[in-house]
Length: 261
Ligand SMILES: C[S@@+](CC[C@H](N)C(=O)[O-])C[C@H]1O[C@@H](n2cnc3c(N)ncnc32)[C@H](O)[C@@H]1O
Image (cartoon, helix red, strand yellow):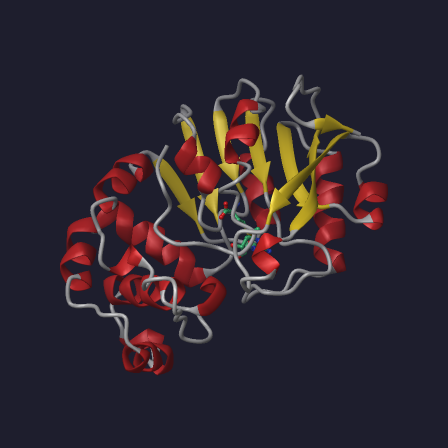
């Protein structure tokens, strides 16, 4: 199992083994909401794979890892975890950078920020600087993993419109309902659009989402599994909390390790 190059709010690091064990047979594997891609990097490659996220900088990072891991590695050897570098990277004009420079900037800002949000410099008295900018040994493995993958930078509905077949499988991990935090807003209308698409989809899907009474109503006609996940990114106190998450599928899953609703 590979480790993604960055962390992402809502990343599925703790749940990925369970999710992978629940994936049915398929030909085309699709992640419309890729984020850091914990499930993708943890599973065996499928015949055809598609990863997508609406965040342009995030997708540029994976494209650059696919095509130029050596150059990213070379540039990252000059990085140090400093507040000044963080401020400089933050105020840089993105369009004046090359795609490779943008990828390095993104890894720096995400890995050296509080809660991986890229907003404020992250530091600690009992944790070292996050190692992603110093340890680039994983990049070549990630590149190999991305070799035969279609990388898209669209809003999710366009992915369903292009790739939906009876042999498609979607792992859908959208932003949580009523929770902010990503650059791109995902509101009630987006959740309704996703629900309507999933109601009519030709392929199979597994959706992870926060356990909320509204969400339960929207997906009442599907299979639903309730699970508790320790929060992976957050303030120290918050990180000890657990939250409820729903795993929703349009196919029957046989699992003993999770509590069936
Ligand atoms: C919960 S995260 C995915 C986490 C991922 N499964 C992981 O393991 O790291 C949700 C992702 O959806 C993306 N997103 C938000 N709105 C979107 C949209 N309309 N279409 C596609 N992706 C979107 C965000 O940029 C974010 O990366």
